[in-house]
Image (cartoon, rainbow, N blue to C red; front, side, top):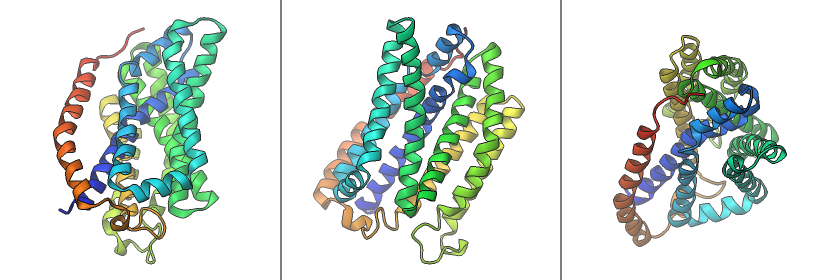
Length: 309
């Protein structure tokens, strides 16, 4: 495998990890006022993501850093072309991060402001990521809104299932019911949006032109529908696996589509750094990445138990 292809796959992997892990973070934050009944349940909800949310954001930093080093032309044109929405993403992440850190140190009105910041930062960022990639693929307002709706609804379902998996008592039951309710919106959005992904930028949008991408989009819809059935049967662990698989397949379809042209008029080969840079990055990545993955896996193992009120 040539290094250009290898690093495109690495970047796709990093973005996938970010959307899966930060996805349930966004969902938990967005659902904070919907699921919680009182301060005790709000703390219980936030405790499910407390040990991991900042580590999940490292995936974004690593993905963007890898894009900068491996595909500088792609990085430069993407950031300049989507300057305003990316600044809004950054603002949402900052507001959300500050609110999560400060919430336990303040009371009264200030704590309510922190809750509002968590909700606003989670909803805004989850919507904007889908809107950015939708606009990147099609460049229309309809695609922008549909992409944002897909990423937001997937994150909310993912987050609701995560709360059901990680909590006990009334909050767990409420999260399960909310996941089913939100799926009423998520499934139709996915049915409309996902079949459009493989055809983006293709002269021939028939399924025979890119069968693997079409199959991945279909599998993403099946995984999401399976998550709904599993949460209905109170199988939260398998339901969370299914929502995570759906996000993996959506992101895989997205980057499989971008492999043709990551930006209009720019191929992957044209965007890539030179062989020496990619070679040095490969050795650094092969040494550092396993340690990072092992550490984060250990973190999730340590905090694997349910959070009680």
